Length: 267
Image (cartoon, rainbow, N blue to C red; front, side, top):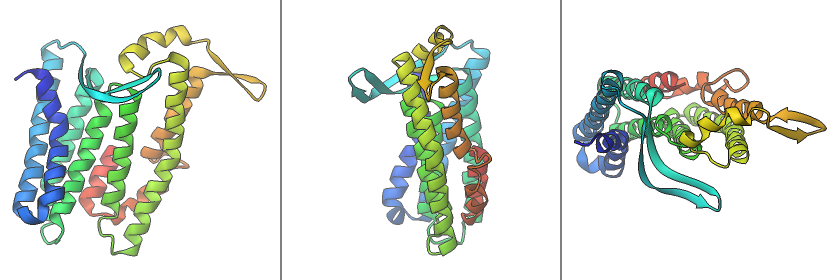
């Protein structure tokens, strides 16, 4: 099979599992729902290890798989693409391996829960969002994956939504992450203002040439590169529960234990 097609399968397999089980879980039943989502996760994991081995021992060059247009507004161009380089090859292995094991562990942990199909659909959705994040070819798709992780975290933390504490913890996680995401969005705007592109392959070679770029504000000239870096880091602070934006993470324990394992691994 063509490697580009294989990579696309690996990224979208968890989304396929989440869609099938999320829409038809009650008709499929518990066993089939668990089997579909977990099986597709292990398919994704196998693809990740193939890509990693090709990168490590096969001397694979970075490549981008263009799938479809995403947002085209004037000079702002963003396409739905999958970027494979050294970092994404490593992160594919980390994300799919940990998530596959969490899925497998959840078979036993959630055995007595009446809403297993919904739980496994949410887990697979979380994994797809992480894969979209780590394989993003530009900042817009990265932001899509970023927000997808936030949405899936909200759904998983509040899985037992009849408990008021679980619902409150889910809302808290969602709101605190939006604070970080606002900084992240401003960082993306700053990058586009500086470089006229948000695509990584075009952007990275241009960074050194923009080293002296400044931004006038409050009578002071600020380094635009530093500003973009700080704003993007604020987004990372929210998702990684760093100081000032850390308050949501302890409350994430309101979700089932496999959720805590996956969210803490993701942060």
